[in-house]
Length: 281
Image (cartoon, rainbow, N blue to C red; front, top):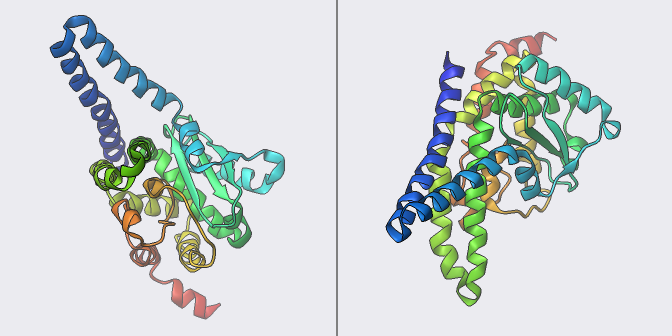
């Protein structure tokens, strides 16, 4: 029941995200030029929304510079994704590779029924254990099942477009970013709640039959973040498993992930006897 409510809430957000701008543009067109201009303006927004929906996975992967990860490059990872996707009850997403050494993962696309993508970095593959990697993959698959990924991709696409729009300001780029940055961040926070990460963590623990792989992976990500340089648009923060950005002024505006320590604590609490079993072993 809880999962169904989450899916319904996310789909409602996406419909509103399409309907409200379309209605506003149609109204503006009516005021400016009557029926024909109203249809033209409103229809343009609908077509743009449809393109974002159908190509959400490619748009998301293009924003972060990922390339498709062929099965022959990492057969064990592909097999793990197949198994976990079947357990989670979602269509298998396309796998993509981020070629840099910064350990991170993200997902983008439409949701559980298909048209989604999951990207992992070369850095993550080099440092994560199999259990940790499965935990991270399961977390991203949980976002697919809950349709979080659709809202995340839409919010990030709008936010990135607004931030990049500031580049058109030339000499006034910084001043324009001062206006557009908070506006982009407001869109992100209006659509996304940090609670989605807690719920995805819990579902990932169910899929993996243990919360500890993901908990260990989050700790490893936190330890590795300061060791490798990383640069990207801070507006893409909601797509990642954990916030990969340094705590700079612009990045702080887009933080939608709860603290890693709190996430790990909640995951450990799902199996409160793990310390005793570890000592016994």
